Image (cartoon, rainbow, N blue to C red; front, side):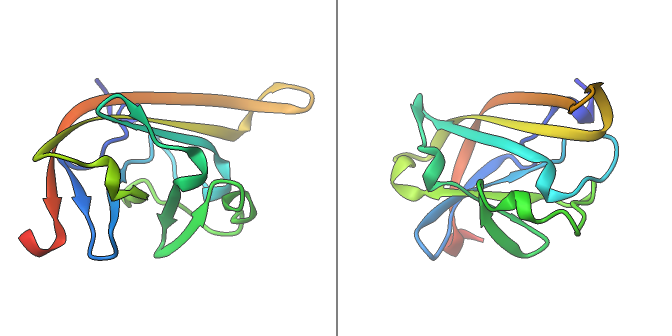
Length: 136
């Protein structure tokens, strides 16, 4: 599996002090892109889908929900950096969790029609250890 086929950027899912769960996401593309290229993100925890409206994505230290991340076209999500996908920690109930995450990107410089760009979805599923912030 190549780096552009993976999105889970760590072997753990965290429960943060704020009471949210979080996973690190890799940019599944070979070039840096603007955060606005994120069309969709989903996460399922132990078979239970987290509602889209409960998700936020932090890139470059700034969090946004999925509808408003489209406004962040003047900055860059660098290939080396990890985004943080946050969701309610109530979905995390054990010492480990089966995490299934998907990320859909719109690649603006690869046109697939007169008014459309390439849309690419990467899905990854793994069992991750659950770590609380005070266990660092």
